Image 1 (cartoon, rainbow, N blue to C red):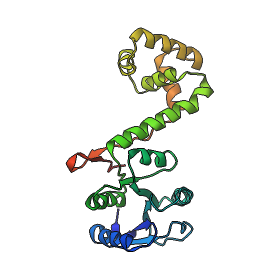
Image 2 (image 1 turned 90 degrees about the vertical axis):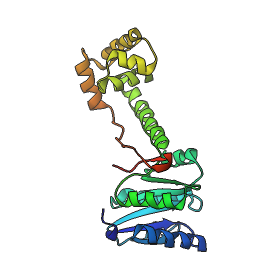
Image 3 (image 1 turned 60 degrees about the vertical axis):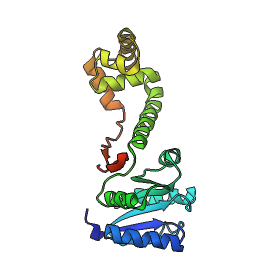
Image 4 (image 1 turned 135 degrees about the vertical axis):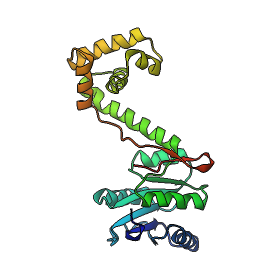
Length: 231
């Protein structure tokens, strides 16, 4: 993405510390950087693309939701959150909001600038472990949504999801730590409940009826801190 047409905006209270942060980022990422107060979510932004950095220490949850809505209404705005306490805090936020970038209180400013650069380029920025937890959250959410509609148990939903990915009975058994005989019994019950007669029909049913978890590739940084920086 062209950084000349991108603005980085810190959503936080204006104070000397935040101004120092803005000045540092401005020198490092070579694009326009400014601040807005937490309640300015209705303000019109003129730049083609906007990367929002929302301060978890100073922005109330209700204002975070308003900024999130503003981003959802405009594909040119992406939202990230900084000053998060830890991974649990990040998960609490990401269960509610669609976030492209996550920055913790103890992240060095050089790493934050690197992450901002990734966001400007249109990539994601979060740790490998957080991304794994997020995918697991979406997967369980998917199972909860579809279980009542088709009458499958959670275990059956797990099995048909793996079956739809092309796993054999043995591979499914190994991943779920059950016997191959148990997998076969579950598959028989699945076929009966969704009214299909073979694996191909079951795979087609799953692809048609089950939501897919977003594919979010992960790459690594120096120092062992793995971060997402691809779509």
